[in-house]
Amino acid sequence: MADAMTAAIFNLNHPANTVHWHFFFMSVSNVVVIVLMVVVFAGAILLPFPHRGGHGDST
Amino acid sequence: MSTPARSWTARARERAVGALPPDKLLPDRQPSYMSSWIYIFGVLSLTSLIVVIGSGSILSLKGPGWWHFTGIGHFFNSIHLWSVELFFFFMVIHLWGKYWMAAWRGGRAKVWMTGAVTFVVAIPCALTGYVSQQNFDAQWISTQAKDAFNAVGIGSFFNLTNFGQMYSYHVLLLPMAVVGLVVAHILLVRKHGIVPPFALADRLGNEPVERDVAAEPILPPTPTEHGSVHTPDSGNGVASEPDRVPAEGTS
Image (tube, rainbow over all chains, first blue to last red; front, side, top):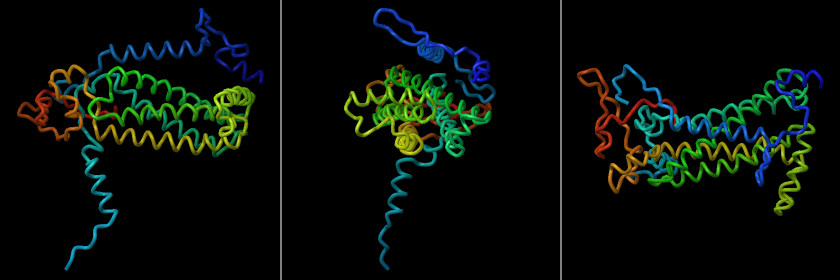
């Protein structure tokens, strides 16, 4: 068990950290995942898609 | 000599080929508006699901003693967990993208519905996995979820503390439902084509989306004298522009 704990990248041997603001109550890990999803979604909309070159496609 | 009565296999084949001719089922060209990162999250979800099914099959072959107490078992346990996390991650972004582009337009209601139901069915599929881990985490989740199921009145049908029931739901019934829905979803996407953006629909006037632009027969590219590729106009005023690019497996 101790080996498993020391092998973990993050120390998970404690109660979950939470974000609590008025009615909002959520674990930090869930907040991180949701923020990541929003960032990736925005990136997918805004970042240019690489076009294939050399085939004459004008896209 | 009279013509023999047509068999049900012939009728089924003709109906299947009529609904999904080979060039629609396995296209090699796609509309140019597919060249956006937002279109890759469907195939990323599908890829994650394949890893989920593969790693889950190995875990079910080897059993909990293997996935809890051996290094390679831990590895496949982690692969299974993180592929599920990615499956939901990509599926939610896919859902957001399709919601904001109103992907049910142009007769694509069934595409939208099968995707939405897949998302809903995938949630208990993951939950039954968490309660099938065979550890304290699973015990905690199952007793908490048991209270939730009882509170909404379905505890007599789904007993979260019944490991045998939860395990069979997790490795057979719910995965079958998810995979079946995903297959239906993909076939419907192939049939109707990916939804065109609003700007293109506006440009085509009043009939745009219902014309199902992306579902028009996909014709092979023809080299021009300049060596570039030209796609024949499909007659709807859209393909006259360079609007087809090679399929990259995105959806």
